[in-house]
Amino acid sequence: MAGAVDLGERLEAFIATLVSEGRYPSRDNALRESVRLLEERERKLGELDAAIQEGIADADAGRVHSVDEVRALIRTRFSPPAISEAS
Image (cartoon, rainbow, N blue to C red; front, side, top):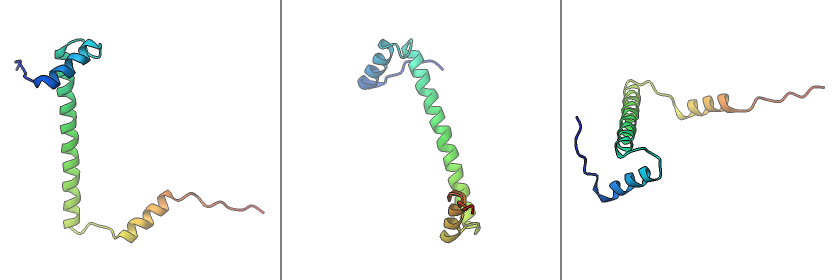
């Protein structure tokens, strides 16, 4: 659905600057990119929301680890390997 879009003075000026500086060939291209980025952001927020809901469900079901367990796991995974001394 195509139609006129009123962005207000500030956003119109921003788009005009992007076009005049050659960042986008036209206002339409800049607006398409804007909507594409908005779509991507909304997708990522949806994924984040789903991950949060999964974490809440895990916590509600008792699938959690104590702070001490997590600390030990982190130390195991991210500690530098021990250096052995050769005699």
